[in-house]
Amino acid sequence: MATIEEQIKTIQTEIDKTQKNKATEHHVGRLKAKIAKLKMAREKADAHAKASGGGKGFEVKKSGDATVALVGFPSVGKSTLINQVTDAKSETAGYAFTTLTCIPGVMEHRGAKIQILDLPGLIKGAANGKGRGREILNVIRSSDMVLYIVDPFQDAHFRVLHKELELAGMRLNEGKPPVFISRTDRGGIDVRTTVEQTRLTDEQISDIIREFGYTSAIVTLRTDVSADQIVDILAGNRIYSKAVVAINKIDIAKEEQLVHMENMLPKGWPLMRISAFKGDGLEELKDFIYDNLGFMRVFLKPQGQEADMEEPLIIKDTSRVEDVCNNLHRDFVRKFRFGRVKGPSAKFDWQRVGLDHLLKDGDILTIITRR
Ligand SMILES: Nc1nc2c(ncn2[C@@H]2O[C@H](COP(=O)(O)OP(=O)(O)OP(=O)(O)O)[C@@H](O)[C@H]2O)c(=O)[nH]1
Ligand SMILES: [Mg+2]
Image (cartoon, rainbow, N blue to C red; front, side, top):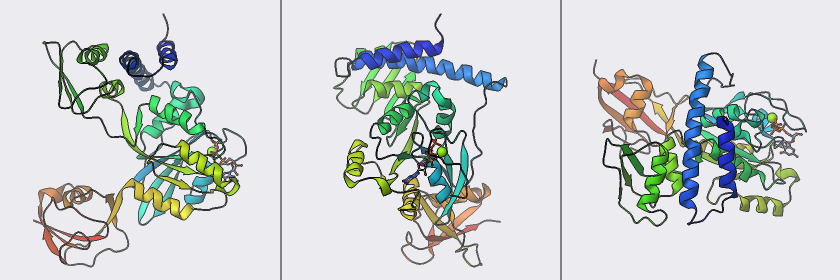
């Protein structure tokens, strides 16, 4: 009997051999569903081994307001970079696999403390465990943002790495597809859709769902669904996170090499050029990281006291007064009477606001509570 690993490999080889087009989408979707199911079984086995004192990962303690993982092939300059922008001291050298574990550093910028994780270089096959790939990918999965570091002389690297992250269940710069599947007791698989389905027939969609062991379910589609999206929803362990790219070593690259590299990257992704070694572009990179994490600063002014303009609260830039309350202490929401805001989100100074008021970067906020 083949091991889970071997079964996954056999199916993956078949997928890789199959030409991807409209006619094969359903077939490939079923194969991917089979892999997703095998991986779910593997995760269960892994969790069991861990609980009984088996494999050691190198998870790190999270700290700060957000965590960013450095992802790149060996020798692209990840450690050189973390040494420049954080307090970490990570070994660097001109040969591959210098870094062997996860090394955290903290970057303080615009009042935020951002944890950056230096990781061993990833290689092809990482998602199947090559070069401690599974441990590295687990750390990446639990970060808030991926910062790809690419070498301008290796134009094929990015695609290889991106594939490994995808195989590890990461969906970068994508939203969760609007597909809802709920198991029912009987009635078969009932597909309901609000938009025209051009890629798969109802029967093909049902086939893929049945691979997961469902015999009856209600499926609601609010998009022209792909086989991959159905598999993603049923696999359940997909991570939809943000990714940005820094092209390193610009000090030794020609303009046309940089442009060529940029053309190889997915359209519309946030992108920057740096030289970690020379220090070029690093202040801009700090802003770039901060901006893409989607933070804002809110200055708190306790009632009857001066506002604290030194240490703002760093929160998601979509936050409301209620989120600030939750961040401070759970009693704040329960005892909340009203807030007062001065700054970009206020119509006038010290506007009175409720829990659902949307805040903006640079606001000063006072929360008035009941005793
Ligand atoms: N010219 C130039 N060299 C760089 C730059 N950044 C890093 N290097 C060099 O590239 C080599 C590899 O750098 P590291 O920082 O060790 O690379 P890494 O990505 O951490 O490598 P692993 O730990 O093996 O995955 C070293 O010799 C660095 O000095 C850069 O911006 N310009
Ligand atoms: Mg390194």
